[in-house]
Length: 213
Ligand code: DC
Image (cartoon, rainbow, N blue to C red; front, side, top):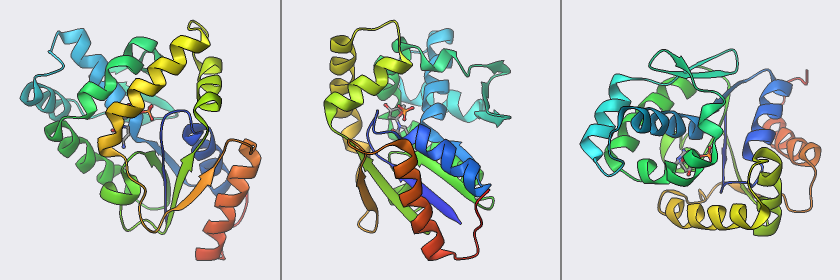
């Protein structure tokens, strides 16, 4: 079974998806980490972020690797480096190129399609894995999203984070759409536990045999 979790930055996708995967004993795939890893590699190698063919080639040559909760690309562990505010600011510039998305989506289908998985991103339920049995679209109030990010990015003040989030939302909007058959959950007033419990209930409705760990 595939559980697709889409929605904007700061809506709670990663926290919820990771915990849900652990509870269900499913694999967890963070597709945003893949765009981040290619962005980091492009910056390291001096590839201009508007050079679509070069970026697509870079992504094709260096498949993002996931192992034991770590993210790697081109032989380097980039788990921490891809969460830097510098990457937050420019990753949408890389993710907007159709040539890059084609390479990433093919790899995401390959990684996500190997059995039970919770897959999080922006276009999972619509484009990457439209056959997902459970689709969830998480949203939250912009102030709450900025506040949640503050905890992840201690170096930045709340105003700078709110501005970064707003700009990223605008840039990401082209590739983000709620699937018609996705269940929208507003996480503004919910705890992580409540959101996970709701999605678990959806999973169980579709597949009553799934047991809790
Ligand atoms: O979820 P995140 O913040 O780690 O995602 C990083 C960027 O990658 C985000 O700005 C949008 C983009 N992205 C995308 O376009 N499609 C996805 N499936 C996942 C992320």
